[in-house]
Image 1 (cartoon, one colour):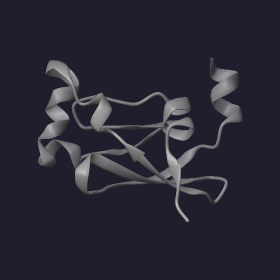
Image 2 (spheres, rainbow, N blue to C red):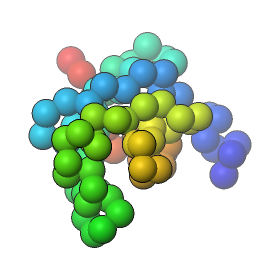
Image 3 (tube, rainbow, N blue to C red):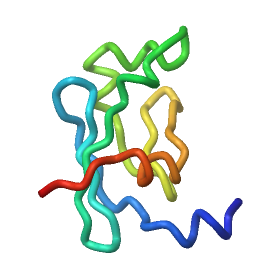
Image 4 (tube, rainbow, N blue to C red):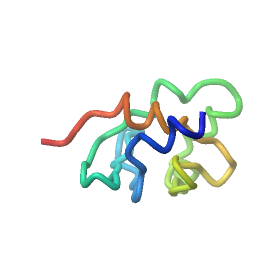
Length: 85
């Protein structure tokens, strides 16, 4: 729900990395790594295998999104990412 999304740290920057990972910075000051590879399946998310598509990732609201419209749920971005350090 929208209330729960607001309680979670918000992504403020995202950078694509090698091996289909994302470097995420949150409004709490935390920096985390998220592995997108488990999501890259089927026709829709499978397009992310193309590095030129994967590199289009950008912050969109409370989450990240790619040029074709693929996105990851905000709670998954935080809960399933690994803190750096």
